[in-house]
Image: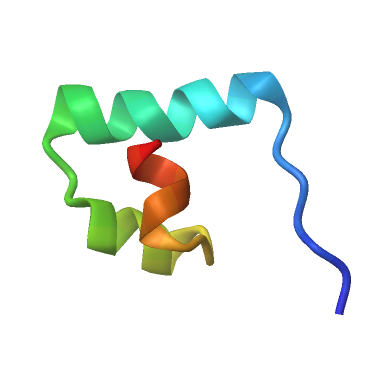
Length: 41
């Protein structure tokens, strides 16, 4: 299975969702199929 690649705009959108809407890192990692460390870093 190929890795999902996110554009810089998509990365900002995911991070904004975490910061602005208080969506938990675990919820975002499940929703976007990411390791939680990828969001925290």
